[in-house]
Image 1: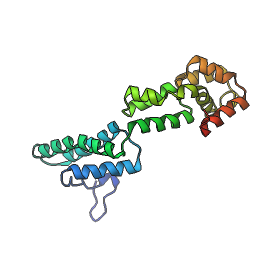
Image 2 (image 1 turned 30 degrees about the horizontal axis):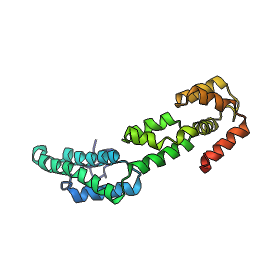
Image 3 (image 1 turned 180 degrees about the vertical axis):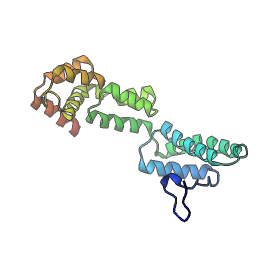
Image 4 (image 1 turned 45 degrees about the horizontal axis):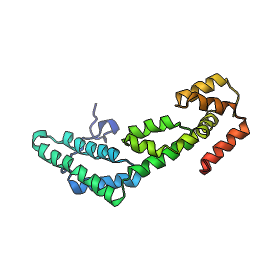
Amino acid sequence: MKIEGRKPGPREARPRKPGSAPDARRLREAALAHLARFAATEAGLVRVLTRRVERWARAVDDAEAAAPQRDAALAAIPGIIDELRALGALNDAAFAESRSRRLARAGKSRRATLVHLAAKGIEAGLAATATESQADQDLASACAYLRRRRLPPFGAGDPLRAMAALARNGFDRETAERALALDAAGAEALVIGLRRGDR
């Protein structure tokens, strides 16, 4: 229901005009603005730019007349990605390495990290290379997970439930048993070493 003389609320917002068609220059600016705010992979940036073009195409009144402009904008995206890769603004290997370290410190297993990187569009070989060092860190990551959840050895609780929680987070049985066998001081030392980058 609309009342005369009243500003439209958030749900009654006026439809936005689509504006002019996105061209290579505008898409490059959008890509740079996105990269200034977020770490992104090549596949992720392609998704962002494609969504932008598709959103414009849906907002246009005459979809058939806008189809050539839409197709031209979509065709410009690979060139923009290549240009940003050449400039060093997009680097999937650096993204995978950085995200792998961050997830290990947060208590994620190597398996969970591989799944996360695959969802971000990182190739399997590149993800495996980035997480190689994490194979040695799985015990420390398991301890970080247990600490965050306040499970044994950091708090009271059923060791079987803690082992089940570790399994759901992607840790294998051997790593889970080793983590639960540690005393609180030993597990804390592993977590501190992981955060400092000793492991």
